[in-house]
Length: 123
Image (cartoon, rainbow, N blue to C red):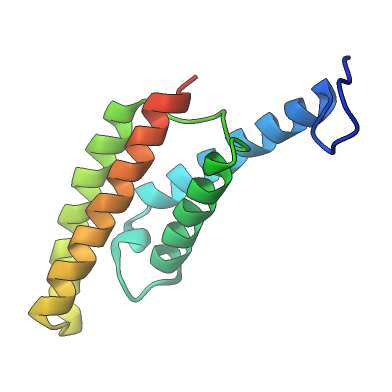
């Protein structure tokens, strides 16, 4: 076990712990993304999923979440399935066309940003 500095993450154990937590978090997030309820804009799982994406983006930017990412192809396939479910459900809520168009674009952009991270950090 090596230590190379006085920082909170300057040792092997800290990086192992961070890697384990990263992998668990992403696994949980991906499981939520697969759930039907996450595609329903008025459900808790929908909002929570996109908060989790933003957390991953922020942590990855600092190189704190670097393990546990799925293959890009898996994320892309999930994004397509997700958006089909979202499209079908959003019409039931009476959302405006403008909102539907902007939110749909945001959802697809979010999945694409995650897919890029998967390319960068895939294990």
